[in-house]
Image (cartoon, rainbow, N blue to C red; front, side, top):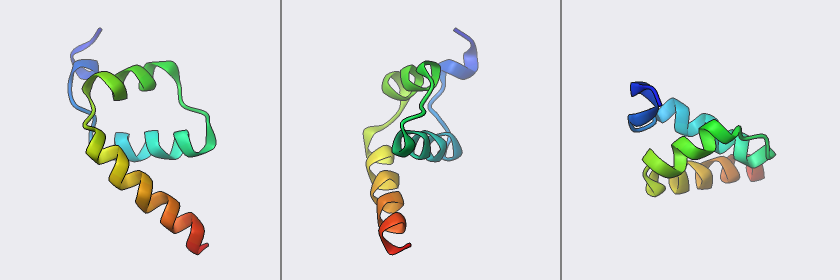
Amino acid sequence: MSDQDKQQPSLWQVAQSVGAALFGVQTSKNYERDFSHGKPSQYIILGLIAVGILLLL
């Protein structure tokens, strides 16, 4: 595992993961990173925002 994989995901990486999850195309590498180093609150908040945007569109 590289040093970058051990760090907490950036806001951009969290947004990419949320977008990939909405369409069901998340890679296993990112999935593992998200669940081992990410904060659930970031994913919940960005997920709610993404769903809200989709509903508005």
